[in-house]
Figure 1 (tube, chains in turn brown, blue):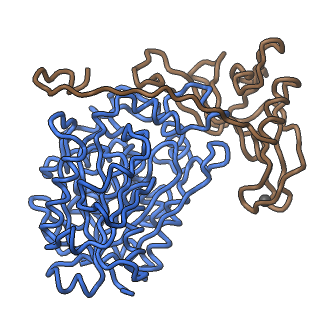
Figure 2 (cartoon, chains in turn green, cyan; figure 1 turned 60 degrees about the horizontal axis):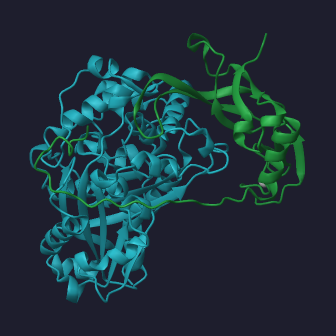
Figure 3 (cartoon, chains in turn red, orange; figure 1 turned 120 degrees about the vertical axis):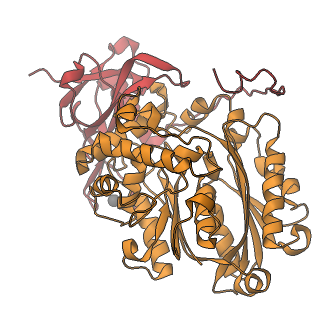
Length: 155
Length: 383
Ligand SMILES: [Zn+2]
């Protein structure tokens, strides 16, 4: 309960809301990146040779030198946990009893933010190897959520 | 064209967890009138240009810049709104005066955070809509992941991060502007509930309402209007790699670049020697340590030791957030940078009351725009 709600003599206030719906175009590179996840279960990067950087997710241009990138490569579906957090709140700020395990997984010179599952919290560490678990092909929609989560690689 | 730019007046209202009786316009009006009285200027006659920092989704109004002029006395005057932190506004005022375009400029920032009913959702709408937002995560996850990597790379400890919270909320007890003063122990902080582990819930600054107005002038006007001008001797700002996938996680190079820009203008080569005290972004406790290192006050990994040694306490070698920072005064959203700058001004004028530092000549204010951004700014002020 906010401070304001606990204050019985607080003056009233007007409420307003706006339904916001936006269209987002994934773009030339974004479309191809998401299609590779959906159709092939592959995570693709794009390479800037000049800067020596493999961007993941693949993108159309290099943010360092602004070259257009046309060299695409499959970076595999396994990567290291570069950093992680145990998130104890929901999107709307309400508290969670059980945390969501969220990580940045290094792939190429970039990576993906995603949830981790099938994991014991005690084993969780920076540097651990994890792999993408894809949804069944029939359920994929060309979304980042076509990867259900990442889990520790089997030894 | 004026080589030197001074702050000649400041006004503020706040800071309070909620302000149900006043509108944001009335908050701003009060701060503006105080600032004009302090500067000895008539806004209708003397001020050449006005700048507000604000964000439509936070304000709850589309095209918010249209709602700015009246409460500042800026009707039928040049006005613009910047989507950025308060120090970006201060930097813009500095440029307007340096170029000779204006002689007196007003910068305004406010927070009516208590009215933003869905702030977490608004913040989440800043995440990448295709690659990140579908995960449905509260944006604090970015702070948790950044803190974890920062601790990993530098060896900074949870205790050292918690010490920032203890220091700043204790400092706030001596600041009548600060609503979140408290005398906590390290153990109490460390035993607190987690938010985005390793980040604890207490280590994220609570929000507050308030407004800050700052009047800047060219050297000539400052000398005729003001007997205690505070000079803006350097300003810098910078944006990092915005995407979560290409940013560096343990470090904040955009703050380092913003500082380099400001240090160059101010002719500062050894910041830890040249700067007497600093007001830094501490909207999450660990950020104060990370920002100290990016600003070159010490090497990476040393800020934690400095706080343990008490070097950043009010009586230490480099007091940091003697005001209480955002942890003690409240997170004022886009106005945070102006709150940092305001404290530096009050200290340099010798008007900081109980918390006044002795013999200070150069102070630094630094801001960060919060998750998920990688943008920040630095201003160096001198009396
Ligand atoms: Zn390149």
